[in-house]
Length: 313
Length: 276
Image (tube, rainbow over all chains, first blue to last red; front, side):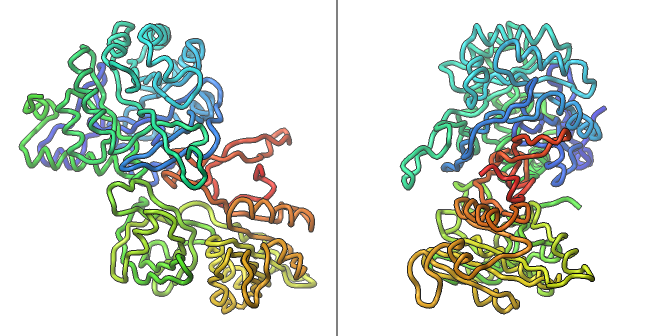
């Protein structure tokens, strides 16, 4: 039984949601790459989270891209981290024991350069009892092999999803890239291959040029565009996908306040992940959840299902 | 007690040199505990600016519970800061990062059988000079002798304030100025024969690299601590936007290149750790 939000309980509001057969205390989760258990816990109690979605982890350590990796844009930002991570062994040794002290669900985001690497990291982590769900990252735009390459081709998306599906017995979420002509095609491919849910969107490919240095701001020239500026695009894609697949959709993209969550739920999302907002305010996830509760109280919604039913989108 | 962003009062915001401002912020939770070399995130007000701006702490008034930051207006975020007048509000969080390690200086100064005082050399470039104020105060309080070498492009600032602490202060400028050394900080140190037992530096990376070379030619860059500047997103360790290659000695004694976060593992590193 997941920890219930005290304020919600006092107001008679049930924030629980079920996604892929797992019950979450509330629909607000972190987004991978913008959350670190040790560092985020300095700002809030991680038990407040619907789920802790951890940074993409690969079988072996990855050192990521050269600096600069960050550029601010109008109402958003570009990043080109390149999935730097310490690898699955360090994840098992450091991240999971720390996170398991908190009363929240753990979603482990998996990264790889090839089907074999995705399978390998899944094999290394499949028996970890702390992990509640896996999220397959086939949407990172900042690596030259793997990542988004798998998320832009339905056949490859299906191949990697079904390969990892065979390895893990925990529910599997596939995280999708918006950098495609029709995201529903990829979502359906993932569903067909056995995904239990899809999460979207990962970042949009973007670029910035520095007029002083007369070169691209990011060392890798292009990067992933995120932040409040991308919310309308994310919302549209979540809405399209929720109508196209039977499995649950987790909404991601530009969420910075409680009413943004309401919009994503209204568009068909079962839960949401909050990413860039955590860079704009370390405790954003908790504030956003609290704002969602206030919105529900003001509008007389006693559950997430009731809220969703009130909208006709 | 969880860390948080607070909305604080701006008590002072003065242009101390062309385009260079000093901002005093009432921040009781931080003024007591901030250490030299730590930094603060300033969160912009405008919705279009989403990322915090990091600034090294310049000084702290422990009695009045005020922290001071020095910043240069270089873009929209710092322009917004410069427009704040006394009484305005600013969203701030800190102190962040690890400051300079003063243990060796303190222990050295406290050693009874010392022949001569511990000599510390503080080197700063541009707005990087700002962090030397609090550092000099603490090193002098620890009983070391302090020489500060400041480098600027054209307009020096902060030298008088630093002299008041009791530090010896040398100033250099790239463009010729009346009464100061013409050249860079390393040229200035060579010119005045500045050496010490421990070195502390903050400024642009090319300057830090030159200082590292200077310290190596006069001894060992393990005696040097540098505060690195980096473009950051979060400032508290989660995004890896500032993750920089560093040398780290492994258990088997071999050195390996690993990435460390300037915001969380730094911003201060030993000179011999940095992959220059």
